[in-house]
Image (cartoon, rainbow, N blue to C red):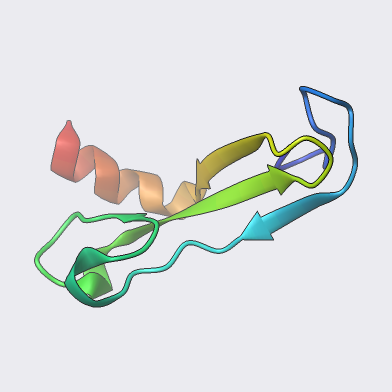
Length: 71
């Protein structure tokens, strides 16, 4: 869905991106890799408006931070 903007479940093409965010106390759609919100890795959602199917994606440039913390 992220790249082709087509839902793999229903074939719908109305796909929206919901930006990840990091709020107070770690609230939001993110993965903490440090002690502050500044170090949070944001997790973005792609949602099909036709059937409600969703996928979560992390930006490629944030993968090294996840590897360092969780590997």
